Image (tube, rainbow, N blue to C red; front, side, top):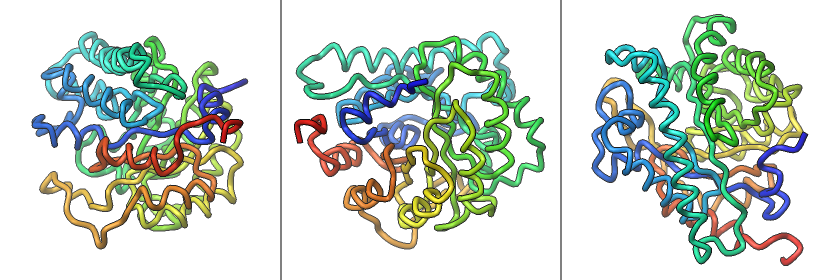
Length: 319
């Protein structure tokens, strides 16, 4: 069965992803204090969310990603928000992404030689719901079955929206990847990428080899691309090399800016070096990355530079 990314890959050879959402909202003045992070803006300033998604599309992104990464029933419940309202907020996140995509696509002068971007529902890992940095550790202590039970209710809601594609993001451990592979067998119409957070050039955040974790997705029809996100960019080339030994699926690479998340202080701190992400993307593409963008602390300017570096977005036959 063809996946939604196939037309973009066929036309352009690469899918340009967006950049950091929460950190871009914060850069524009949004208050992201508390456990909901970017999902808080669904309640307080949905228009700002829609504008950020739109700006990433203008910059060159082929996906309009929803602000549902940290939006979970458990997280909303801790704030006294009931299940019906929580479901509505999840649906709103996709509507805002769709509205941004439709507004962008209605301006024909803005998307010459582009393929229509995909409305994409973000599904964060279990650790994101804890708001304690667990997405960079993966030390949950939960079984695959428990993780399936956590993810299913949110997925049930998102499957009823206009989402055309799904992004399972910042997965830090093998057991959660196993849980998602098993769970997605119950959603045969879904297509997604799955990306891991990683601690070095060979291992995911919890410590398992990236090749082993990528291999868990090899038999999944629903997961059509696999790779890594919110990982220091200096590790990406080695990770792609290792991942390519375990899959023939298109690889995904959208690192953070190179800074590290301090969960205690709830802030980003300087990394060990400055890394030029747009300069590296041609190498990543040569190593098999076909979905390329940025994560936390990257901006629309980052995506614009990536898109420019990867070409003028002309179909292959015209190159």
